Length: 91
Picture 1 (cartoon, rainbow, N blue to C red):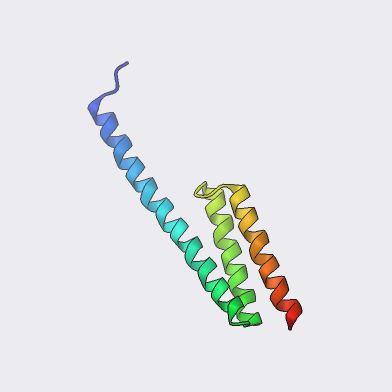
Picture 2 (tube, rainbow, N blue to C red):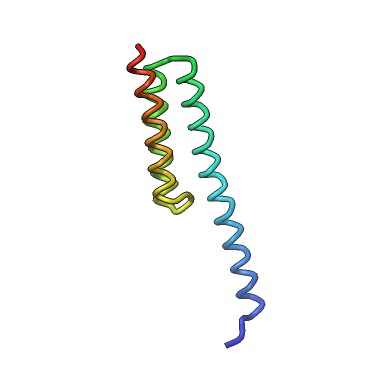
């Protein structure tokens, strides 16, 4: 069966919707990571703990949706947790 023009148009629309949804989720993850790293650099332990929790939630959500791979999310969470541990042990 030949691919019809209407099918190609629908596929293009769906791809664009998914691209925008994925872009939004990736952007949210990056923003939360930057906010967390900034708090760690300022040595604000309590705020960093809250930001870490929020960042982990966003990473898990993005991984579950397939925006980023599960391994990428796990690696990022591990690195950020180690960063927090060094901050917490210094205080």
